[in-house]
Image (cartoon, rainbow, N blue to C red):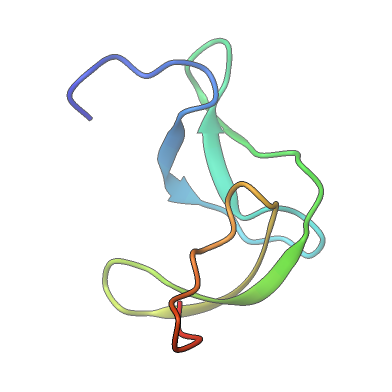
Amino acid sequence: MDRMPVPGDLHGGFFIAPGRCFRMVYSDQLQATHCYEPTAWKGIWRDRKGKSWYIEACRRHAPKVKADGRV
């Protein structure tokens, strides 16, 4: 990141727990905290190393699906 993060910016890490969005975001204290939005999407997400994870995500953090159906 080339600037100071602000609350709500995505953090580089993620956390997987049933029924919760997997994304970590910056809090008001600029600490990484869990996104507490309700989940609206379930599927597979691949991290930068190519490892696949079964995740749940809120609408805002759901991976973008390509025209051929791949994430």
